[in-house]
Length: 199
Ligand code: IPE
Ligand code: MG
Image (cartoon, rainbow, N blue to C red):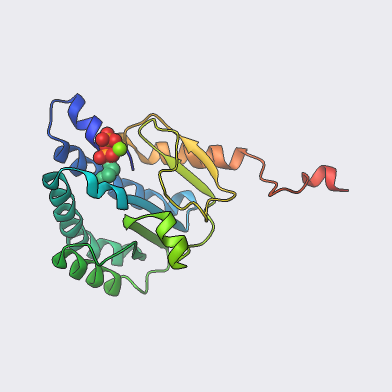
């Protein structure tokens, strides 16, 4: 989820307004994902390197996470979405840690979609700590950058990469559908030969 700040700046708004709009995009994508055939969705919300941002922006993000976890949890339960937050928790504000624990507990029986929110996440840290997730099939980066920025490095060994210039707050269900269509149009060989040539 990249591009919140630029989305806001281009509109003459504070960066926090971009993060709020980004949270609406999260809601849209989570709603759309199961209908598009996705059983799992991992969103990179806050990287271990995002602590380098100004304290005011970091604090606004932490409050936004906590608030959205509280307001969205009943809807997640209703839709059968199981939420897990991945990343370090020891550096997060205590109220946020409590909101995370409550949301995970409330949604643990959800079987329609496994939603993972990466907060204070670093793939290098996760690899060194041995906390690995399932392999990634499709990795979508918004906001025009063409890099992985320490996200799911191990799990993306054979991920199909899709880069889009769309800023995250503008990302819609149709954008997700387009990325998934591109994924299905690709031939995945995992180092082997295509079936037709394999004999
Ligand atoms: C959202 O986009 C991702 C977060 C770290 C919350 P950015 O905040 O990186 O937005 P840009 O890249 O400055 O536009
Ligand atoms: Mg960014």
